[in-house]
Image (cartoon, rainbow, N blue to C red; front, side, top):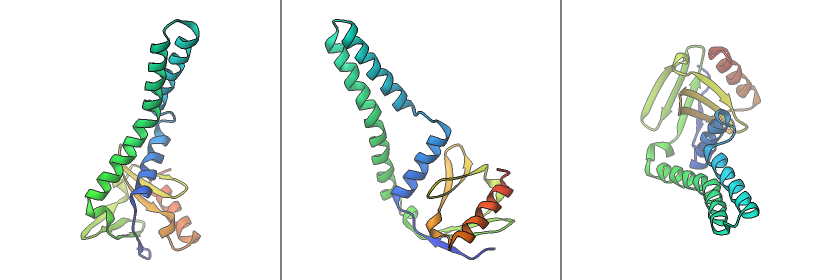
Length: 162
């Protein structure tokens, strides 16, 4: 096993990682696409018909969907984080050819690399994805230098055939 890497996550790091995963799978989120379509429909109604009230309604609804849904998702994520004390405990990570040892508070997991489907690297860390919406996030700031980051990257890519 490698040296132990210890870190605490905050809700913003985890939320940003979740949003990075979402963006890597769907370049245009449904709320942005749907909101944009309503905004365009509102503009077309306004310029090419006498339905000014409907046009303003479509425009307003498009703006609410485009900006409101992400704000609600962010608020819900923060609320969930605050209600779960386990998320706020210290995380300990060790990795080797055999797998990953992860400890969160009093819960310990020895996970084979086969547990994970893939790895995605964000600017802030590594997401080890185990199923569609479940992942472990390991921030780069927790690793002891660029050498350990490169070692982890190479091992994860090798084990997960990236």
